Length: 326
Picture: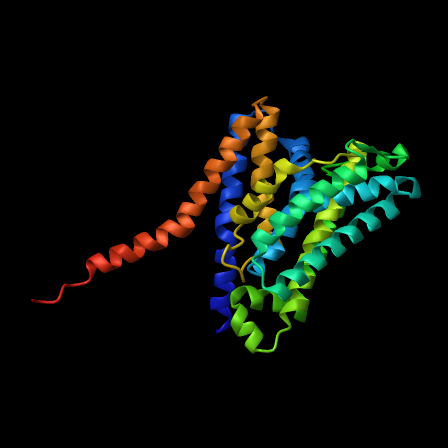
């Protein structure tokens, strides 16, 4: 019997993003008649290969009670590293880019924990630093793949999937299993739920933080190299427009800003919501400004529900309390 409340809480945590996703699909299907079938699913899944991986990286730091704002710059640097090694084949490209992201993120996480620096301020600085490094390494111009043949498998469509979306979904599965079933993964949730309590319990904060940001960097590296393979090049200054949507996808999916709560399923749901909106409006021929307005309005409404509703409820409770006689 004691298991039932936990199951109910778990199901309730997914209810809002699932309902939101269903509602978004229904609205887009009605408003945009051509947005349906396998092509629509393919368009949404393609969002997972870039936006989804960036959101996944951001989410693991949010669960730990931190926020990695350098993820886009990490993706750019990793993409350039991968593009420079494209002559060695797709496998070497991907492994090198992911390794570059893991090292970059791991160093940041260790320094944040070691120096007890606010992660937002620290990663803003490293984002600027990495962005400048990308321009230096790329010599202020896009880095073209030395072997364009590596792009061919990634441009093929397999039903509703591409090789990029399959790899990205595989990354989601690996991160989800690790965080859900390993001791180190549980420590990330413990730190996000209460840093001082976790340290008092003997959890090694520096190691956990380094690991968390290493995962974030690895996700960024994978996102960057997949984009460079598909585009045939890696450009410094790319992906800047994806940082805020990545954070928004986490919040829409149900990742808590307070830390200690959320899963990869929440991220997937949030990405699917934004991906459905973006793909539907693109099919309809709407400008990007309309897409940004729709996503921004949706995020504000959800934030209002999360932070405003509890305060309104507490206010009503206080108003209903009887006043003491004078």
